[in-house]
Amino acid sequence: MSGRAVPAVEARGVGVTLGGRRVLADVTLSAAPGQWLAVIGPNGAGKSTLLRAVAGLVPREGEVLVEGTAVDDLRPRRRARLIAYAPQSPALPPDMTVYDYALLGRTPYIAYLGSESARDREVTRSVLERLDLDGFASRPLGHLSGGERQRVVLARALVQQAPVLLLDEPTTALDLGHQQQVLELVDRLRLADDLTVVTTLHDLSLAAQYADALVLLAAGRAVAAGPPARVLAEPLLTEHFGARVRVEPGPEGRPVVHLVRPSVASMAEEA
Amino acid sequence: MTPARPRGRALFVASVVLAASLALGLMAGAAGISPRAIALALLDRLPLVSVHSGLAPVEEGLLFQLRVPRVLLAAVVGGLLATAGAGYQGVFRNPLADPYLLGAAAGAGLTVTLVVVFLGGDTGVSAVPIAAFAGAVGGVFLAYALGHTAGRGGGTATLVLAGVAVTSFLTAIQTFVQQLKVEELQRIYSWILGDVGGGWDQLRMIAPYAAVSTVVMLLHGRLLDVLSVGDEEAVSLGLRAARVRFVVLLAASLATASAVAVSGLIAFVGIVVPHVVRRLAGWSYRIVLPLSFLGGAAFLVLADTIARTVLAPAELPIGVVTAFVGAPFFVTVLRVTRRVET
Image (tube, rainbow over all chains, first blue to last red; front, side, top):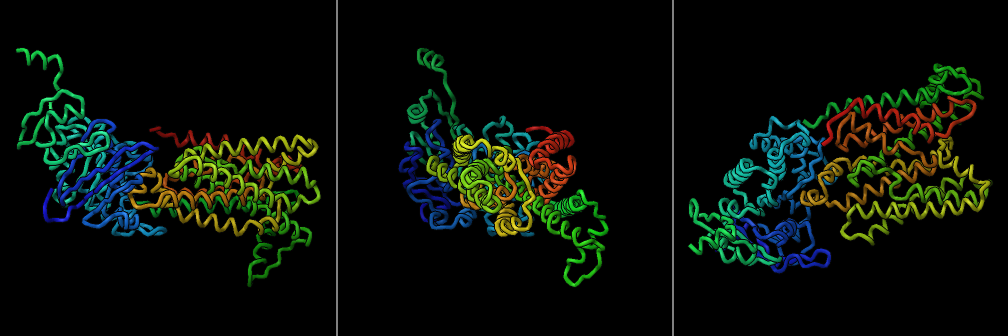
């Protein structure tokens, strides 16, 4: 995509085989510094696996580079300072406080048998403040609403201070308002800190609105990549999602995808 | 924010409770030795201190050859079992995990039965603890090897299942062996139900293993906290999750084997003490592990004191007391600290 600059994150020829099944094959993606890249695709296409492969959580073939450095050559703690990852449904121990959970984001900076420094605490504090979570600091995770949880998970990832942020379906299980809140928050932080964000998103219109570039995965392969207007083409979506859709230009030239009921569509054609 | 001060206070309170139960354990017994004399006799043993306790040599012998080692052994065994239980719970992220989960108990039960049945009573004194230790380590090793070959990727579920399989398999062999010599049943059962009267020899025997395993577990508190958000996230945070789990598992198993070697299969301590601690002092393994050690030690010293006093001069098996006293205590703590389940 972008020409000269070294991409913030780049994956080349990524393949993953899980339990004898080929889940991903030869996937390539690249995101420039400060860019938001969304991975889209039908259920089971391998979106989450791709994110986990980039994060180094599943055995994979191929290469992942962050700011030009191959992450396989790095020790785990070094890698964790470059890539932060938030899973789709994170395990949130109900008794753990918001502050202690966010503080876990400092793990890559603490020696094996060491403990948190004053700086680790300070970073955590300031992130909680930025996300308007300072009032929640001593609240147990079990007492949070869905939207609050998502923000807390985001806080933990930010505390990691990695230039690349991988978010697996950050809006699952959130209502419309909270979806928007979380995505706006991610966008604001991305712009403020020049973060590179890679998310999986199942809502295509949301993906189109927030991401600078999309990668469409289908059956473990990247079948299209580029700006939203190019990837969200009706024939592509029909082919890979098996859905009847209409894509319309939306605000700022970002496409909006509508589902079209087959009966309505045929009536429209007849008319 | 992270409660440094409450943590210190909790450790202080637990230490006081342990000290009080040790004192109680030393005072309780058939020969009425006065607390003052006990205190003076203990002081006299300190380097550079010389006081006269007024104890007769027989009483002094009873105190230092029977009561002191017994109370200390109870404390060490209780501490080991409770810390190991907390460690297992952290590694498996399962509140029902206990020190015997991976076949330590079944392994020790089998080897002790073999020793009692085939070597008879004569060699029993020194052979039983060694056999128990070897059996406990062997049982865990078997479960680990089986779990490792059956489940790739270092998942914990397969390991637990392997532990279940190993436990029932070894128990089956043990039951078969003990049927061969029914007259030894009582000895086997009295070993299983537990006893901490092994004296200085047994205390000395397990001291190095107990010390190393406890220190290793205590050092891994923070890392177990990281593991509590799940393996995948722990790895994404730069933690070698499989390695941490293996190290803690190894230490917890060594602690369990040490305890089993000198005390039999004392139930309840390893699972209940960590839970009581969690209810009272919070979720973090940095506090759960040391408090479990102190709490487990105090609990077993008290249980042993009850075991040898309620029916004096007869002794109850300590395992009976831990369950009989421990279960209602546990329920009380659960009720008092009632909370919303999430």
